[in-house]
Amino acid sequence: MILRTAGFAEISNTILYSLLQLRAEVFVVEQNCVYPDLDGRDSEPGTLHVWLAEGERVTAYLRVLTEPDGAARIGRVVVAPAWRGTGLADRLVAAALTAIGDRPARLESQSAVTALYARHGFTVCGPDYVEDGIPHTPMSRPAPSSTGPATA
Image 1 (tube, helix red, strand yellow):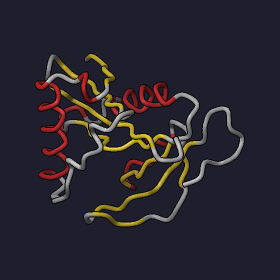
Image 2: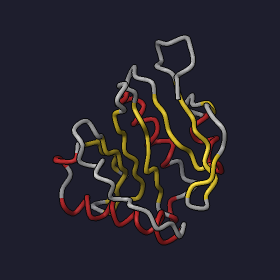
Image 3: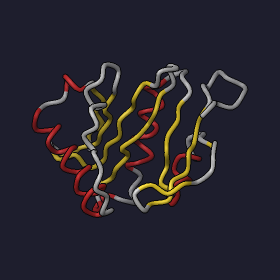
């Protein structure tokens, strides 16, 4: 299993197709959420794509966006059904946090998997809410050199 990180322009067409296919299979089909996954943010300058693949088949993926205040926003975290429970999501989050460096980070966790992010220093920073029929929990992680909580 190979871990990769890249900006949008550095992703091959084959890998891009595979990661978009995985996102659609899980978020749209499996979770039955009709929403605009292709939201225009994948190709923004500064967006980082992190994925694990066997050959050219993406098995797990996330993206890191840059917020207007400079904080990082982790999103679109997905693991193929056959690979769930094998630690791939932990590998992705650890790689993303390494790439993020000293910036604070935020995410909107599906509530069932908040423990994943808590293992990486994220804490709940707001009330739970339901989006597309799925409970979510806002979480944040302060910059590693910071002593105070990150703002949401």
